[in-house]
Image (cartoon, rainbow, N blue to C red; front, top):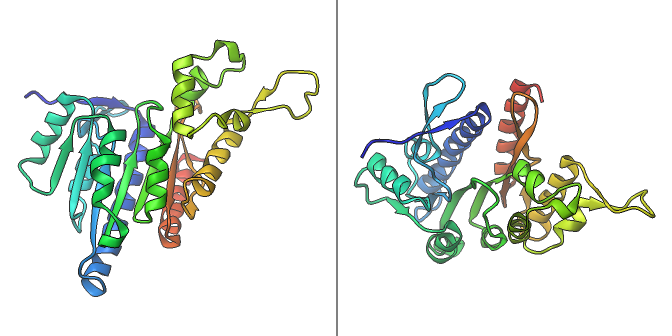
Length: 279
């Protein structure tokens, strides 16, 4: 099979660099815990929108490791790897890249179903299983149930991509009559209910006018509070805005965990890349 590659922008390269930095720190800490304290401990890597595994840099034209290859090349090694992509061709390429490894599991179905029915049951806290999960959808096609389940399990840490550009263009229109209904439905599914409307529109100072759309910053903070208050993650880092060369925010990258040390490490990583980008 001839390999296929996605062309990615600098924002995706930054995201992948962040994932690589944290995956290394995560694996090092848990491997040490396994060797010195809890021999039964196992830690798994989950990639819900895994993609083809290799990308091409739009900036340099160079090949860039995708998140699955980053995980496979991380040392110490994860105990198991779960790569999900609904596109059968991408799933086949991931199998070709990973080879006949018994610790690599590849799924070609809707990630919402795969995570809830097959993968999350394998990483229960009581079974001494832990997981690092990347929820990096191509749009906003992700169920709140997945996020909330991960938060309540206590064993799963997540990087989560909130596609604010897609949301703004299609669901959160200033003229609400112009919203794309399918995208509104997707946002409701992602948020878990229609309360996103209260977070997205404000009537402050507009006694006799229609509610006004709030800023990106206000909306992303509302989602962050929902990850803590509703999903049950104890620590949710201020998200990293991923921007184009024209300074438009494409998406916000969140990190959510039950461990303060994990949040501290990610905050340091986020801040390092913020400084590099002048944020």
